[in-house]
Amino acid sequence: MSAWNIAIVGATGQVGSALIELLNNSKTIEIENLYLVGSDNSAGEVVRFAGKNLTVIDSQQMDWSQCHFAFFVAGCKTSEKNAQTAAQAGCIVIDASGFFADQDHIPLIVPKVNNSVLTEYRNENIIAVASPTVSQLLRCVASLADIQLLTNLHVSSFIPSSLYGKPGIDELAGQSARLLNGMPVDNELFDNQLAFNLLPIFHESDHRSLGEHSQINQIRKVISNYDLPISIESVIVPVFYGLAQAVNVSSSLPIELDMARFSEFGVEVKSEDLPTPVTEVNTEAENNLTIKLANLRHSYGNYEQIQFWSVADNIRYLGGLMLIETLEILINDYL
Image (tube, rainbow, N blue to C red; front, side, top):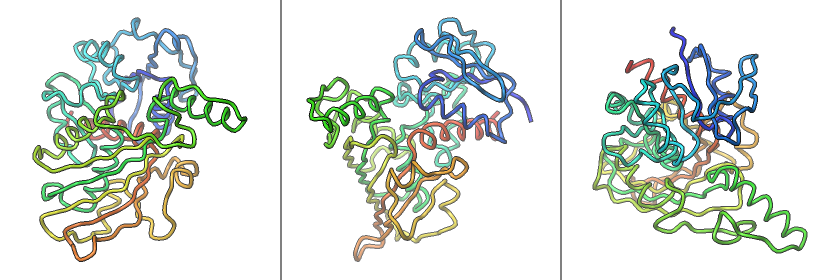
């Protein structure tokens, strides 16, 4: 097993912190040096990893030629500014910002669903990982049916505030506290009050990966079916962590459930209590990160159509673990 030099860009953010924790416990990726990269605000901070204190480096001071791989989890502006510089220095970039997702020459992956696209990483030394909403959806769908046989797909996503990063969490927490104390709220990140409310996301969104058009394009790109009818509804809910989805999927052939397939895609079927963000995400053990799938049933009288409900940790599982699995597959099968 080789030891690698890895950078995490956005190391002090939520997904960056989850990556550090997951890599610290990884038994499959051996790390020689871990470089933590941040902005002016976080540069100089000290983070504990593998028994050592690591200092966060300003992104403008980073020597990318030292790194074999770099996880970019700091948002579109940071990826736009630094990812190609890192790639041109010989570092393979694994980007979660959504900035490269719709670029034809950049492979877009949902690990375990379309691993073969990683052969294209040499195009630009950049790999884009699909958004949390798309990753959760397609991991579940692929565990149920042959994605090449899909004829229709509908998903309703219930978006936690943490998909908007720390500002989303802070705004929901602050609004909740003010309302419970009889005080008016201010809306800075969201257009309307989120606390004790629901905010539909319309056709386009300020969040690059949550707009309907972006999600549909990502789904079609991952499954290589650009004609598949897809309908998407997205609602921001007053929940801090945990992405929930209600899905209806149709296939050209009857969908026969194969229970052995679920574990292959990191999906756990719950037959009794319905999973919720609170009951699953907050109590989930780190060594058992899975998508919880429940209420699985064929539509009445139609065995080519199936419906389900799913919940996943959008920070550790859909954020950190998707990136680590992408790197594991790349190292083991394509380098």
